[in-house]
Length: 162
Figure 1 (tube, rainbow, N blue to C red):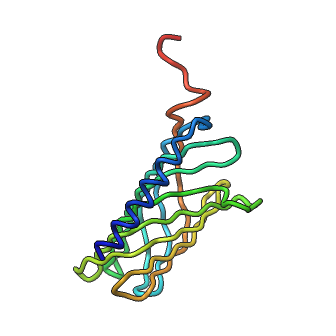
Figure 2 (figure 1 turned 180 degrees about the vertical axis):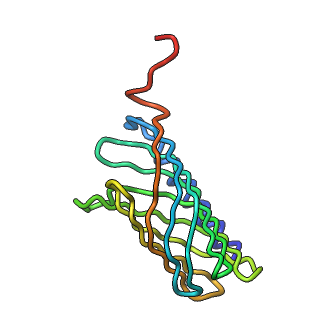
Protein backbone atom coordinates (compact mmCIF):
# COMPACT_ATOMS: atom_id res chain seq x y z
CA UNK A 1 0.00 0.00 0.00
CA UNK A 2 2.78 2.47 0.90
CA UNK A 3 4.57 1.63 -2.35
CA UNK A 4 1.41 2.42 -4.35
CA UNK A 5 1.01 5.78 -2.57
CA UNK A 6 4.68 6.55 -3.23
CA UNK A 7 4.35 5.76 -6.93
CA UNK A 8 1.25 7.98 -7.30
CA UNK A 9 2.93 10.78 -5.36
CA UNK A 10 5.89 10.59 -7.75
CA UNK A 11 3.62 10.64 -10.80
CA UNK A 12 1.74 13.66 -9.44
CA UNK A 13 5.02 15.47 -8.69
CA UNK A 14 6.38 14.87 -12.20
CA UNK A 15 3.07 15.94 -13.74
CA UNK A 16 3.05 19.10 -11.61
CA UNK A 17 6.59 19.95 -12.75
CA UNK A 18 5.58 19.50 -16.39
CA UNK A 19 2.69 21.93 -15.89
CA UNK A 20 5.04 24.80 -15.13
CA UNK A 21 5.98 25.41 -18.74
CA UNK A 22 7.15 28.65 -20.29
CA UNK A 23 4.08 28.52 -22.56
CA UNK A 24 1.70 29.19 -19.67
CA UNK A 25 -0.45 32.18 -20.53
CA UNK A 26 -2.73 32.40 -17.49
CA UNK A 27 -3.07 30.80 -14.09
CA UNK A 28 -6.48 30.38 -12.44
CA UNK A 29 -7.53 29.54 -8.88
CA UNK A 30 -10.92 27.81 -9.10
CA UNK A 31 -12.81 26.97 -5.90
CA UNK A 32 -16.16 25.27 -6.13
CA UNK A 33 -18.80 23.01 -4.67
CA UNK A 34 -20.27 19.83 -6.04
CA UNK A 35 -23.49 17.99 -5.52
CA UNK A 36 -24.34 14.59 -6.87
CA UNK A 37 -25.38 11.06 -6.14
CA UNK A 38 -23.06 8.25 -5.07
CA UNK A 39 -23.81 4.64 -5.92
CA UNK A 40 -21.96 1.35 -5.81
CA UNK A 41 -20.51 0.64 -2.39
CA UNK A 42 -23.14 2.76 -0.61
CA UNK A 43 -25.80 5.02 -2.10
CA UNK A 44 -26.82 8.55 -1.26
CA UNK A 45 -26.54 12.29 -1.73
CA UNK A 46 -22.94 13.38 -2.29
CA UNK A 47 -21.69 16.87 -1.44
CA UNK A 48 -18.18 18.21 -1.71
CA UNK A 49 -15.79 21.08 -2.16
CA UNK A 50 -12.93 21.36 -4.61
CA UNK A 51 -10.09 23.81 -5.17
CA UNK A 52 -8.04 23.59 -8.32
CA UNK A 53 -5.21 25.60 -9.80
CA UNK A 54 -5.21 25.57 -13.59
CA UNK A 55 -2.50 26.61 -16.05
CA UNK A 56 -3.88 27.73 -19.41
CA UNK A 57 -1.73 27.05 -22.48
CA UNK A 58 -3.65 28.32 -25.51
CA UNK A 59 -6.68 26.11 -26.08
CA UNK A 60 -5.58 23.47 -23.52
CA UNK A 61 -5.46 23.66 -19.75
CA UNK A 62 -4.05 21.48 -17.01
CA UNK A 63 -3.91 21.71 -13.28
CA UNK A 64 -3.84 20.21 -9.83
CA UNK A 65 -6.77 19.79 -7.45
CA UNK A 66 -7.82 18.93 -3.93
CA UNK A 67 -11.33 17.53 -3.52
CA UNK A 68 -13.20 16.63 -0.30
CA UNK A 69 -16.48 14.67 -0.60
CA UNK A 70 -19.05 13.50 1.94
CA UNK A 71 -21.95 11.04 1.66
CA UNK A 72 -23.91 10.74 4.93
CA UNK A 73 -26.07 7.79 3.84
CA UNK A 74 -23.02 5.70 2.91
CA UNK A 75 -20.97 6.89 5.92
CA UNK A 76 -18.25 7.91 3.44
CA UNK A 77 -15.67 10.72 3.36
CA UNK A 78 -13.08 11.01 0.58
CA UNK A 79 -10.05 13.27 0.17
CA UNK A 80 -8.70 13.25 -3.40
CA UNK A 81 -5.53 14.95 -4.66
CA UNK A 82 -5.09 14.83 -8.39
CA UNK A 83 -4.14 16.29 -11.71
CA UNK A 84 -6.54 17.44 -14.43
CA UNK A 85 -6.36 18.04 -18.16
CA UNK A 86 -8.93 19.61 -20.49
CA UNK A 87 -9.91 19.28 -23.12
CA UNK A 88 -8.95 15.64 -22.88
CA UNK A 89 -6.08 14.88 -25.30
CA UNK A 90 -7.18 13.79 -28.79
CA UNK A 91 -10.71 15.05 -28.14
CA UNK A 92 -12.55 17.80 -29.96
CA UNK A 93 -15.30 17.73 -27.31
CA UNK A 94 -15.31 20.07 -24.27
CA UNK A 95 -14.47 17.26 -21.86
CA UNK A 96 -11.77 17.05 -19.20
CA UNK A 97 -10.40 14.28 -17.03
CA UNK A 98 -8.79 14.20 -13.59
CA UNK A 99 -7.16 11.39 -11.68
CA UNK A 100 -5.24 10.88 -8.49
CA UNK A 101 -4.95 8.96 -5.24
CA UNK A 102 -7.68 9.17 -2.60
CA UNK A 103 -7.81 8.63 1.12
CA UNK A 104 -11.25 7.46 2.25
CA UNK A 105 -12.94 6.97 5.58
CA UNK A 106 -15.75 4.43 5.28
CA UNK A 107 -17.45 2.95 8.32
CA UNK A 108 -14.65 4.38 10.47
CA UNK A 109 -11.90 2.55 8.53
CA UNK A 110 -9.28 4.33 6.43
CA UNK A 111 -8.75 3.03 2.91
CA UNK A 112 -6.63 4.06 -0.07
CA UNK A 113 -7.93 4.25 -3.63
CA UNK A 114 -7.64 5.86 -7.03
CA UNK A 115 -10.23 8.36 -8.29
CA UNK A 116 -10.92 9.22 -11.93
CA UNK A 117 -13.42 11.93 -12.90
CA UNK A 118 -14.63 12.84 -16.39
CA UNK A 119 -16.26 16.27 -16.55
CA UNK A 120 -17.75 18.78 -18.97
CA UNK A 121 -16.06 22.15 -19.39
CA UNK A 122 -18.89 24.39 -20.58
CA UNK A 123 -21.36 26.23 -18.33
CA UNK A 124 -22.61 24.03 -15.49
CA UNK A 125 -19.98 21.35 -15.10
CA UNK A 126 -21.48 17.85 -15.08
CA UNK A 127 -19.27 14.97 -13.93
CA UNK A 128 -19.03 11.20 -13.64
CA UNK A 129 -16.49 9.75 -11.24
CA UNK A 130 -15.30 6.41 -9.98
CA UNK A 131 -13.11 5.48 -7.06
CA UNK A 132 -11.50 2.07 -6.90
CA UNK A 133 -10.17 1.13 -3.48
CA UNK A 134 -7.83 -1.60 -2.33
CA UNK A 135 -10.26 -2.97 0.27
CA UNK A 136 -13.76 -2.39 -1.16
CA UNK A 137 -15.81 -2.50 -4.35
CA UNK A 138 -15.85 0.58 -6.63
CA UNK A 139 -17.82 3.72 -5.78
CA UNK A 140 -19.40 5.73 -8.61
CA UNK A 141 -20.76 9.27 -8.58
CA UNK A 142 -22.64 11.60 -10.92
CA UNK A 143 -23.55 15.23 -10.42
CA UNK A 144 -22.50 18.77 -11.16
CA UNK A 145 -19.88 21.29 -10.05
CA UNK A 146 -20.50 24.98 -9.46
CA UNK A 147 -17.12 26.73 -9.73
CA UNK A 148 -15.98 30.34 -9.81
CA UNK A 149 -12.62 30.99 -11.53
CA UNK A 150 -10.25 33.71 -10.27
CA UNK A 151 -7.45 34.82 -12.60
CA UNK A 152 -4.29 35.04 -10.48
CA UNK A 153 -1.61 35.45 -13.18
CA UNK A 154 -1.40 36.40 -16.84
CA UNK A 155 -3.06 38.83 -19.26
CA UNK A 156 -5.96 40.66 -17.66
CA UNK A 157 -4.26 41.13 -14.28
CA UNK A 158 -3.68 44.80 -13.43
CA UNK A 159 -0.97 45.82 -10.99
CA UNK A 160 -1.61 48.40 -8.26
CA UNK A 161 1.16 50.58 -9.68
CA UNK A 162 -0.66 50.98 -13.00
